Amino acid sequence: MINRTQPLLEDSALIALYWDRDESAIGETDRKYGGYLYSVAYQMLHNRQDSEECRNDTYKEAWEAIPPARPRLLQSFLAQITRGIAINRYKERTRQKRVPSELTDSVEELSYALQSDTDLEQEIATAELGRMINAYVRSLSETQRYIFVGRYYMARPVKELATELGMTQFGVYKHLKEIKKGLKAYLEERGETV
Image (cartoon, rainbow, N blue to C red):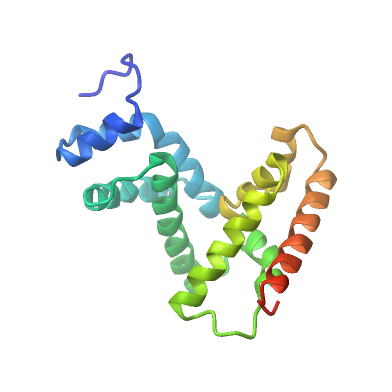
């Protein structure tokens, strides 16, 4: 049983629990990151039950991945797992019917900047494109990085980002337009056809 009054474990201690195959790792992870992981899934799915299931599936996948993985940033590692699970669940749902989502909106907004005639299906080309996008994102200002990750990685609503940053929605859209334009130019400079 988890004591809710105990301080949260440091990530290194959580990872050690996984490596020791101590089942309390799951409960401690839920206590520290459960709300965050639910939020990651909910931003894409807008469904309480699906989001809870994604969060719980994340713990199972983390248990299977650690070891051998030893994540440097546990929160990001878990969020990536949750995001992948949520995307798969979203695809399953949309195969059955069209479901509106921030994920659909954010991917559609960015899609033109990433269109390419080259064969990005190949793993090497995809990995290289990912490295280029990561390098571009690192070059952005802190505010623009927050907007990019919030909108395109976390699929968060523009209104929510605007509120958090103390900006208008128009201001966030203006940043998004600049980011997309910059990303397109950045990729073209590096030989990607967009």
